[in-house]
Structures are given as structure tokens and as C-alpha cells.
Image: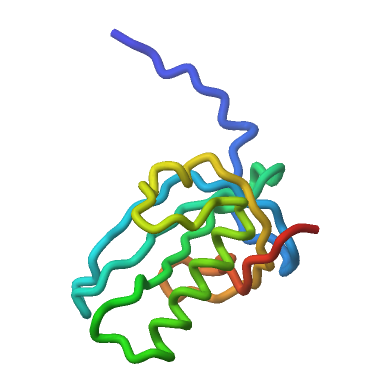
Length: 130
């Protein structure tokens, strides 16, 4: 017979932080393909540095495709460049996204009400420092 001996007195529900500028760390970065459009996107899971009770941040950035017009492709590239600059990553073409894991950078966060998950933080804009 085994016994479960776990102290739950310090347990908390992860929460959203107030809107503002925060230092983030990339926990996971991967390229995925949209089931809706067939286009590829960079899928990020990040944590807020020094905010252990904060919920993780999930952020998606679509990659440019050959079907994009000039404006759409440029907008997608600018979003990626802002992320790379904020996290001090060389935006070399053909980069392996695994190098993003563990990188830290800055972003302005906002709060959104998600019908499935409740209040969550979302990236409003990546910035180059506090």
C-alpha cells in the first residue's frame, strides 16, 4: 500500500498579470501548420520572468507564404522581426527555432477574456527593453 503525502497549502491557480511591460522567457518554440489555411506559423509558449504565479503566455505569428500580397507578407515579417529584436536573436533565414527556447525579451502585455480559459495575458507588442 502506498500513501500520498503532498502538502497542498501552497497551491495556487495561475493568473493573468496587470497590463504592462514584462520580461518573458521562451519555454517552447515550434513551427506548426494551420489546419484552416495550410500556412505555417511560429507557435510560442513563454513565461513571465519573476512572476511564478502568472499563467504562461501563448503567442502565434504567421509566417509569410507565396500566396500573400506584398502588404500581408511585409506585416508578417515585421511581426517576426520585432520578436527577434526584442529577444536579441539574429533573424537569419533558415534558423532552427529550437535556439529560441530559453531566450528572454520584453513585451507589452494586455489582458483578454477568453471564453474557454477566462482572463489571460496576450502580447500586445514586443519591445526592446524596460
